[in-house]
Image: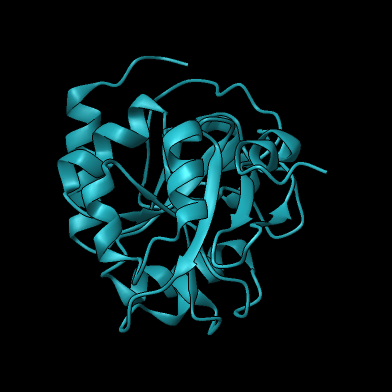
Length: 206
């Protein structure tokens, strides 16, 4: 993967501020990004992916301060996991703040958040100043795209407003999703980080 290009980062941020949708690299594959404050863009991601409306969109932040825009509370389990595994490919479910768009919660009262370790993702969200979605860049049920060419091949030439020219991502498993609103925390989706390592860190390894 290529290092972040400042002009490309600024263009991605411009598109996001205008309510557009971008494709950008994450730790494993490309993701579809929209501002959490752009309802039409959030709805458009469902259309692009042909994704069921009851499946919420995961979100990335570039700093712990941005978590306050999303989470109503941070449990002891969340604090343990954040300290050990963030930034990185671990998505945590928090009790959602009131007023978040339904696309981010799926009417569950929870929101999935990750502090990304990818330099492109961090640069874009940091420059923008608030969180964006990071759902995988693919049609629902199909493999995610790992390059700009695959984004256009899988979704269509003009499905998104801007594709970051970041080259090829490493691929592999998606982020591990952990529900930190329960004790012990619940593994919702195994992924790039071994669930046993996460549970062990919390003192609840099987």
